[in-house]
Image (tube, rainbow, N blue to C red):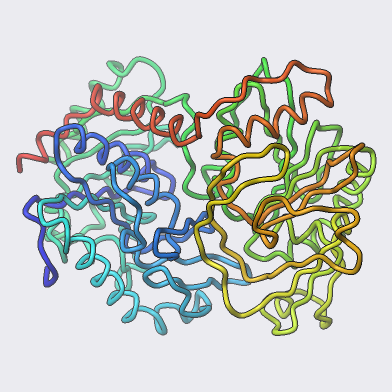
Length: 507
């Protein structure tokens, strides 16, 4: 490669298909290398996800690379994910290069318009990442399948990148989906000879039951491919941070002893759903994802999460009748909480004078009615707010919390609104809570990562428990980051137990 070179051979995790488990395998490899005294450097040239995060320089990056950075013991930086595509419907995506938006592209014109600049961003990301980590080892994650024939000539982040840095590649196949032999043989047969030479090992992922039953299958794969099977990863029951909506759909944790059910509105343009991971980790809480045409039922609380297309999602929940159900729930004293786009939806009006969103929905007006549960109005502006925040909350407890904001809309209290609501925290632009001493049941904030904060999260949960006549949970200072680190360690323990990576590290 032309940029600064690491002294250790790079590794790259490829998959036979989307959702094969590349993200978790890459995460495990990062923690495994950290344990053996190395400096792993996670990297994904191009990612498509609305699950974003803000780094220390107020730049956007995909959450999956953030988790991998934490697994590697590093501060996440956007150079680990230099190209991020954030889908926004109608076959268009916002394009993020090195943490900053460079515009919107259609799927049909993306590679024509963005291929050269995207490859430059990837090269710059690699150079910057290696600049201060000459002793580190790159651990790259591919995207989707590396052998999509119609896309292969313009693929930015799989084989082009693997060849560019001379990576030792691992091919991951998902046996849970079935057809694992066809997955592997088909993928390898579609590789060119110089590309196939890059594949140094195979991992079979998500095996259920007695792994010894796959011994014959393992021998057959090694005989036919001449590539060693590094191991078979079992099906993991732990709930891990998801990368994209496919993982969100597939993970359905059942908690028979849950005492509280929280309805999460699954907006069509849902974003930053990792905000809910800390609640998933609470054994007393069962999350129930509600789509626009579903019946809300009688949950103990409702959360409206972030949205990449707030106006489009607002229209969907209003026309489906779900919006009226949420309003009825709130008027009866039900706890409703909005995050970012969810906060905007709770407001009285949303205005889009620049046509940033409403040109993609069937309405020529630029002013829209929200659910009117908080007396605020939101105006969408061209400049995006990207920043990390450390603030002190006013509700439901006095607590120091941290989080980050990613949004175009700017919200403010309207008319005499301060008579009925109060600021959520000491930064009065970051959210509000209903002021009524009898209910105080509707609130929202722009802060993503709000539930990561242990004291605040447990205080909010206890607010719900009190309404239900349940005993309060202990207020713990433990933030979700500690639980997440434990989960990464558990994942890596299983990886070490079942996968022999030394064969590749020595090559």
